[in-house]
Amino acid sequence: MRLCSVYLMCALNSEQDCAPLYDAVKCYARSDVARFHMPGHKGKPISDDAESLASLMWQMDVTELDGTDNLHMPEGAIKKAQSLMAQAYGAKRSFFMVNGATAGIYTMLMAACRPGDTVIIGRNCHKSVINGLVIAGLNPVYVWPDTLEKWHTAGQVETGGIEKALDEHRDAKAVLITSPDYYGLCADVAAIADICHRRGVPLLVDEAHGAHLVFSKALPPDAGSCGADAWVDSMHKTLPSLTQTAVLNVNSDLLDIGEVKSAEQLVQTTSPSYILMASMDIARRYMATNGNCKLSELLGYIDDMVEWAGNIEGLRMMTSDDVVGDCGVAYKDATRVCFDVSARGISGIEAGAIMREHGVQVEMADLYNIVLITTVADDADDFEAVKKAVAMLPKLSNAGLPAFNKVLPHAKQAMSPREAVFAHKEYVPIDRARGRIAAQSIGIYPPGIPLICPGEVISGEITDMLDTILAQGGRVFNIGRDTTITVIN
Image (cartoon, rainbow, N blue to C red; front, side, top):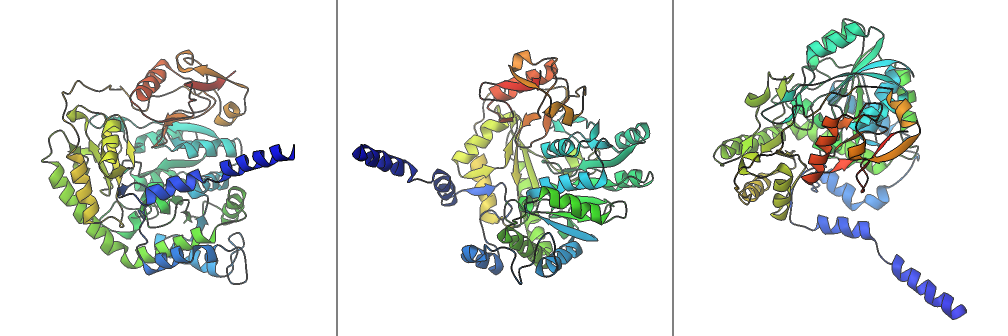
């Protein structure tokens, strides 16, 4: 019996003698690939501070000690670091978010509203906004963007749509919009802020994809300079900061700082990583001292790519001239590179896979486009790698790809997101979900914008879109491997 136990223990130990996630990450780290995806540091410690953080990582993994301060009761180093962050972003107060921009979105909603309140939401939002509505118990009024038909993607929310929603829902306690979006499309934040402030309503902005904007006048204006009352920047997306780092900025008397502090502590860990917080401090210092120059250099590479792309058959690169002034788009962030490859007879999803095979990892691919995140960590060699990978894309007969009347189809809201999430549920195949009420958000990831939100009625148009996206190899969140959808029972 004892011998059998020894054999069993050896077998268990042998099975445990592996680290699959570590091995996968290590394999990617050692691969020779141009990284046009998050995080914004692109695997490069781009300053002496970052090099030091990497070499001392284990020693710097500390907790609340004398001299290291406490995130939830900052009095020393963290307080000073957050003050410097506020100066950089032109805010009255800045708060480190170690649970990502998601925690900042939750904090803004909880600080501005109370359970049962109405909030105006731009429907091109990330799923974390919908999750925030569930957690805070809020009732959304959605403002839907129109479709940029030439690019088969959603535009931005129109100022008129926000004004109409506020006029029809005078009890609304806040407005939350997303700008820029995944494609670098920016709303007219200044005009929307003016509309909100004339009614005494705070404007909250999910600026997760725009943490870099404040560091260059050559880029679209950042949310703070446009008059936003609170905005959250995901530092790890476009700045040389570690994954999971973000900053929540507040610059308004319409939000009570005490409420912000209280909400922030509810959604953040009580054991924040000092390595993450230190990387935010490093990124802020680097951008404050070098950001304008480095972004100017980056924009030079992108100008060259615009000229190059104009000579490639079947390739279109999105520029400001293509989108600004259409469907609520006020600005286009040039650092977010988007190529339409459909004229080559392939989908963006296929193109993304081919480019990976030839040394370029893109951030996102949809049915028509591929999206690359460029940051100050990218150099001339990285952009040359993109050109070489694009040259490997096939040119097929263009049989045409599926087109949708609306890439973000309107859906009827039958109950609040919170009611739907906590209702009794069942799982049904996609083809049996028509007419049912969704119990979860469902959409393509990335970008993470829900095609259907909890509490909305699933239409035939939406199920057809999901079928098409899955058939093309797209990744859809909250659909089971057996292609079932969670609905209200």
